[in-house]
Every structure is written in structure tokens, then in C-alpha cells.
Image 1 (spheres, helix red, strand yellow):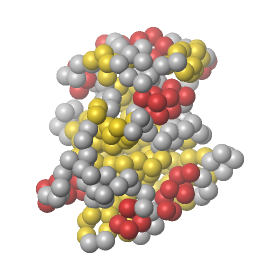
Image 2: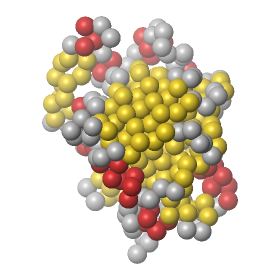
Image 3: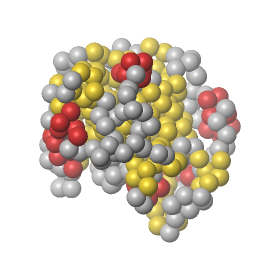
Length: 305
């Protein structure tokens, strides 16, 4: 990173002051990024996916903004594990129900994200999440379950979502209602190795992961687009947030044995332990992808009192 990029500038975000890279994409464009400019970035393989997704100006808790937020080059890793439904239910709001793959068994995941080029500049992120039934469904159909297991469309409730930059924390917490905080967070993903480390408040390990990257399959832009719906409560009202991933290169290992997950001390570690994970069932890595993150919209959920 050059010294120019390392310099920062203060900007207002819904009454909160955050620092962003001087002359970065956010400093220059405020979410209305020039796609032709992005297309010239050698890290970005193309922008056709985004040309088909026009942005809309909306009011939000962080002030007027444009949605979706575009991520032009990302890499992600997701370790999916079995966990007892009883433990999962202790961490879910009563309005949500776990996605069960067998009686008494649900799915949880640890996720790591590296956003190399995006509207709010480079940052990294990690998550502990619970797979849930779609909020508006009563019974979950077989095809919903299959799609969920294939990661084609997942519904999730997130317990932890640390990030590495101020703007990502303020947008995520104030604008989306996610449990976000800022910490030291390293994520490195390439075609050979996937590693991640989330620091706790004292600089030690909260969560860390190391594994061989699954063999990757390339996809044409738009050929494989997966979606994730996350549920959050904002000012006491339920909202859903849609993210769409344009998968360009990805691979999966079923029943992975050589994934080293270190559960240390911290907020993420506490959340993961509370779910009582049993064993990993799937390890998914996207070494190259793109993402459109929409602003939350109000949604109805079933009462499960």
C-alpha cells in the first residue's frame, strides 16, 4: 500500500465521524463509484455484474446513502458445523427458528471475508452465524433445505461480526443493526492456503483458522450468483438484509478433516462455544468473487411464542 493510500481523511456518517483512506473510493465517490474507474483496477476482473444493478438513493440511520454497496473484488471462507438445536435456540430471538438438517441438529458457521476493492475501501470481516429458517415460512420445504446446504440461498442470524475499519463498523452497526466492532483482523485467501486471525481486546487470539484451500472451479460472471438474507432488529423492528455474491472462483470440501480452527478468548470465541459445535461438515472458499450488499428493509416474521 502506498503512503498516499495510508493517509486518511475524516468524513461524517450520520453524525458519526470516521476516518477513511484519502483519495480512496469512498473519499472520491461517496458510494457513487465510477465503474469505468474500477474496471481499470488490475485486481478487478470486470464490472458487468454491477452495471446490471443500478443504485438507489435512500434515507437510512446513517443518513442519505446509495444502495447497494458494491464490492468489486472479494475472497471468503465459510466453515459450516453441526450444532445441537437446543444450544442454538438459546442464542436465537424467539421469532426465529434454526434450520434443522436432522432432528435436534442445526447448522452454524464461522466465516471470514477479505474485501480488497469496494465502495468503502479495503477491510476484513469475520462472523459467527446461525442458519435459520426463512422468517416468513412455516414449514421448510425440502428444496429450501437443499438450496441452503448448497449455499445458493442462505438465511442467517449473526451473533458476532467484527471488522477492521471504522466506516465498516459504523455502517454495519448503525445502518444495518449488526453486532459489529473494530479489531485487528487478518484474512489471507489464495488458491493454496486460507488463513485468518481475529484479535481480542488484549491482542490475543479470539478466533483463528488455517486450512488448505479447496480446489477451485472458475465461473463466468453471472453464471453462479448466491444470496444471503440476514435478519436484524433495528429500533425494535425486524429487518432483512440481502447480499448477492457473484462467484467467480470457488471450491468446497465436504467433511473437512484438516481445518485448524483455534477458539481462543473473546467475543467470537464465547459465541461459538455457546453453540456447542459438534463437527465440521463443509468448508467453502471463494478465492474470487463480487458482492452487492443491499440496505436493510422492514420484514415480517412469524411469532413463535
